[in-house]
Picture 1 (tube, rainbow, N blue to C red):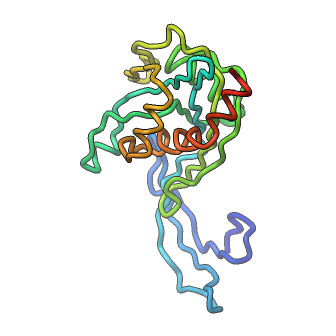
Picture 2: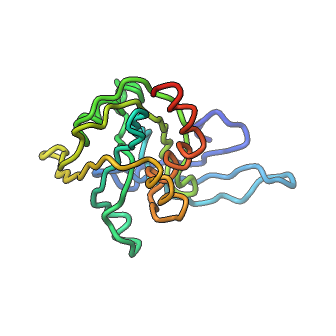
Length: 203
């Protein structure tokens, strides 16, 4: 037995990398405790090893605007959806970085805006049936005046359109299901619940 996560309810029989490229896929053989008692048979599962990510929804409480980005997403294309998704700003967390450092850096890279205060929204497992990604989300205080244009890192092939839009309109789009990326929908729906508090705090 491999002590993978020190959870006595799970026995990892074997674990090996099935693919290691831009991302990694790990192949597990495992069994786990059942609700009615006893153990499952040995199950074969692959996990897309995404690591930790961080998201920030930049919000200007004075102008009552949010900064949203639009970029091409291969997963949406493969699923048959429009691949240019509207989202909040996101990035992958490296070992030496905090999630707060990541969202501040990504806000500069993807929208050329500076985040000051951060309010945690929560940490979410976006596709826990197949992927290890744990995403920490924040709302960040910004000055949205002058924000806009195309940004991103050339060496990563990024082509990111940033736009400042009225918060009310963006929240309404999320509520209507028009923003299908969790990176956009979750923080916008959260803002819909907390917008008045943030305007009193940051306005």
